[in-house]
Image 1 (spheres, rainbow, N blue to C red):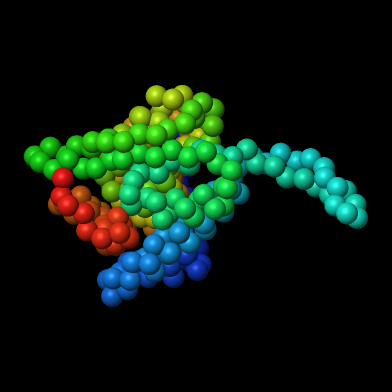
Image 2: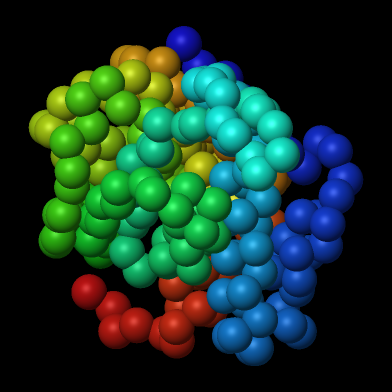
Length: 216
């Protein structure tokens, strides 16, 4: 079962933050770029929380009884390094969540391939999992990461959380993910270019957050 949540359909302050991320004249300010990723992570985490199951109980204030709400913490998983500022927004909302980290990169060459260079993952059996990565381009990194995650059990539900998504990436994940999942994004962009970058997109979120990396 697949559900798409495009938060860009309803204009909000999130649209302002996303516009600033896209604007090439603002992108040289790395701290501002990271901060906008962080704030959008908080906004998306809050929206996802509305779909989660809360337990209702009773508590006592100094004056009277009141409703007590509890939420089973999800598992937050992000792809290094581009996902970190976005992830920190989620972590501040779900502050008791367990976390997992994956190092993944595109292997340059004739064939497009994804290499996993680092894994630190918790047990996800019957847990709500949030896969946090700013850009859903081809979908291969996220699909490959989810395969690694599921070595540690099958989640009850997977929320794929991304700033921007390309139609090609959505189509790929729909073929690859065989459990209940939802895609959350602030925009579904037009397409991928010949180098597999999202158009219009915003560029390389990792480089814009931390500086250009040496090519692998």
